[in-house]
Image (cartoon, helix red, strand yellow):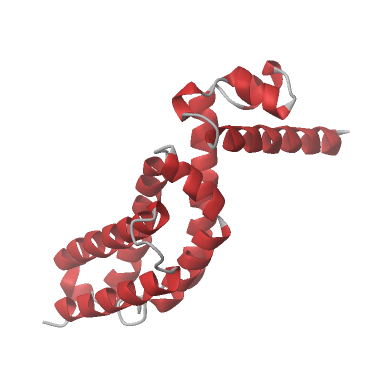
Length: 191
């Protein structure tokens, strides 16, 4: 019986998330109400409030899930050689962006990508600092500056690409440029 209850709860959460994301493509995020979400999901308000405190809680949950998925990917490939060979990480991020492009474009369109970027920036900075301090222990003060520069630049470049600011530029072309920039950053640690 417990398994069925958990399965039903997971189904309800999925339906509520999907309903919210559909609504994002139709109206401003600030105008989406709990009633809108529950009607679209064909669930009652009680079910919504069994899982979320309100719309902002639902948004936070979606943001956290998205960032968590990317964090797991980054943990698999992030190592201390990032400045010498950033391509494995850039390719994984690029694949993630393509795989989740519909959702990410909706978040860009409704200006809800900023919390995702902030959380992702925090997680990526932590991972990069922990790995780079192993590779460059004598460069500790500069590691923080290098990390801020690289992580901030990567995330802003990807955000610009998602926004369509690059025109018909592909994610591979974005990653090619980022790879050249990141590799050139390595020289700072060698001086």
